[in-house]
Image 1 (cartoon, helix red, strand yellow):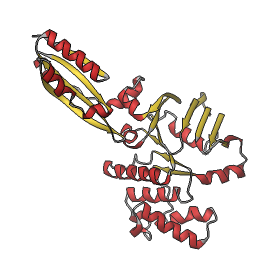
Image 2 (cartoon, helix red, strand yellow; image 1 turned 180 degrees about the vertical axis):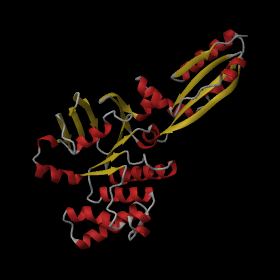
Image 3 (cartoon, one colour; image 1 turned 120 degrees about the vertical axis):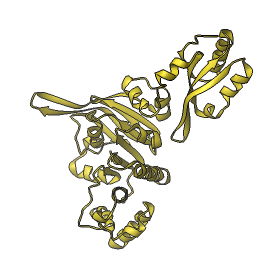
Image 4 (cartoon, helix red, strand yellow; image 1 turned 45 degrees about the vertical axis):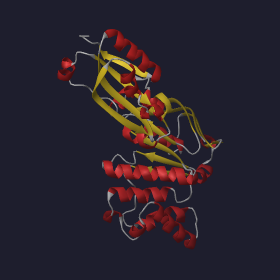
Length: 339
């Protein structure tokens, strides 16, 4: 669907050239939500704007549906952009136009007749949950409602692709969740491919099928979102994941543990199995749960538990072997002091 091939974006600077995007290669599948995550200055927003050539790559190529956008004339590119919607952090709504008029504007530019325009606007307002806000001006709308208008405007002309540049970063957590649910609904019901830029791993966790992590203009890790969360490879990716999944046991509590303290990771369907219960019944050991949580990565469970195992040394070793056979990640944090 979207192919980003050897894309570089270099800007002139006072002290030499600044490389914002460096040798990026990505393939984004038709109908998926693909997240690009990184800290400020990582190059992710520049890369996003290269996809629809709001920023023309210094080198490299951008393909959408096997069509090379970087080879198009200005007129051809203007036409191609009608199949690429875009939403921003700042909404970019005309303050003098109502919600309905803001949505209608993109249809007007595309040459849609007035009657069809009105019908489409009504349909879109219902889709984004703003049927009763058609005549409201942006100043009368909340941040979440403004973003819904922005989304409706972006998909008005039935684009194949929707680009989202930090579209939820200015919103509170509850509103962010509702906007993410709307994007997920649009993706599932309309089949629009969504490329989502964010610095928040929580956003990626909620709706992205796959994701890429950027640092210093480069893609340092990419893959299925669940795989990235359950087994991150790069140190920066691990740091991002820790903001959601990691937790530390207080030193005072660890000091009181005389048994073997282990960290267990339950992936996929295993998260719903009674592995620990089975282990405690099968071996002469007892266990204390010190900490635990289950997160859902696009509705797929990922559980992390830290527990203390008490019993004789041989029994604990056998229990650990059993756990390692049943799950992918078993890490001994502290070996038992007394048996």
